[in-house]
Length: 103
Image 1 (cartoon, one colour):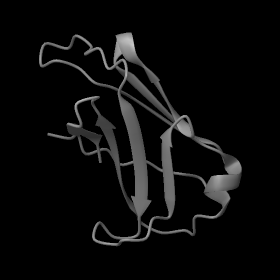
Image 2 (spheres, helix red, strand yellow):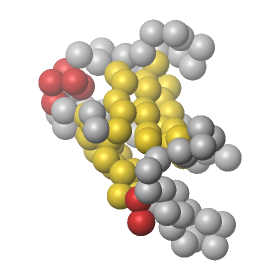
Image 3 (spheres, one colour):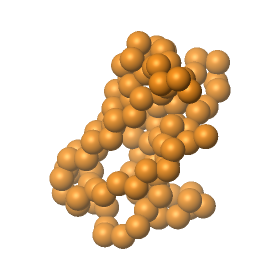
Image 4 (cartoon, helix red, strand yellow):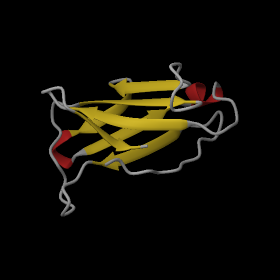
């Protein structure tokens, strides 16, 4: 089950989010060869995203430590209007299994 985490993105400033995929005992899960994607929407049901990032384009995965680091640039956040939004950060295993880390 994904962790629910509220965050604030300052319009026109760089934004960072780092999450670690862990076993229930707190040890990191190796996610080498996984991909990741983050999407932000006005409403969870919206088909249009306000911001989309993916592995190699704003998201970096450090496989052995299970770490997923997200970075939205100031130019990207400048285009997000003030308001409440919904996001999710998902990782995809080489087998195609998708896991939502945070929302």
